[in-house]
Picture 1 (cartoon, rainbow, N blue to C red):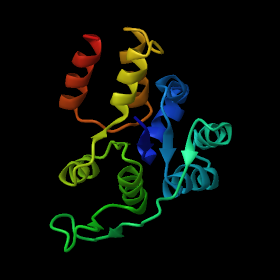
Picture 2 (cartoon, rainbow, N blue to C red):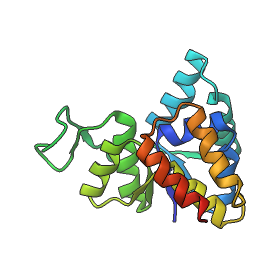
Picture 3 (tube, one colour):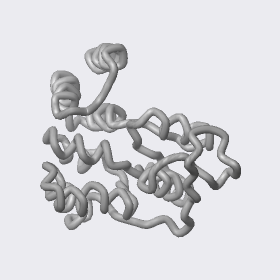
Amino acid sequence: MALVLNATPLIYLSRSGGLQLLKSLNTRIYTPKAVYDEVVVEGHRLGKPGADLVDGYVQEGVITVRSPKVKLKLSSKVAGAARESEWPVDEGEAEVFALVQELDCIAIIDEQVGRNLARLHGIEVHGTVYLLMLAHHNGALTKDQTPAMFKRIVAEGWRISVEDYTVIMEELEQL
C-alpha cells in the first residue's frame, strides 16, 4: 500500500513534530511536484515552518516527489464537472488524484471537498489522522502518544470542527 500525500498532511505533520512518523509506516510515500512546490518551494519563499524539514525528508528518500504522467484537467465548477477528467480542485490535489490513479494507491487529503470528490471517482482516500493510526498500529506511537500528537497538530492550526475533533479524540482514546 503506497500513499500519496497532499499538502496539508505534510505541513501539519512537519509543524507538529510528527513527520518522522512517515518512516514508521513501512510503505512508499509520494507527493506530487505541485504539492512539493506548494509546501517546500513556496514555504521557503514565505518563511513557513516545516518547509526545510519536508525538503529534508525528500532529500533523504522518505518522500518521493513524482509528477503524474497524465495531468487531470482542472475545472472551476464545484459540482458536476463537464467531463470525468475535469476536477474542481487545485493543481496539487489534481496531481494527487492523477498519481493515485496511476500508481493504484491511497490518497491522503484532509480537505473535505477533495476527499468527497476522490470518493466519487472511486479513489481510496484518508486524512492525517489515518497516518497517526497507522503509526500507532506499527508501534511508532503509544496509546497516549497518538491523541497527544493529534492535539499538537490541531494546536498548529489544523482546522477541524468541534464535532469532528470530539469524534476523533474518542476514537484515538479507544486505540
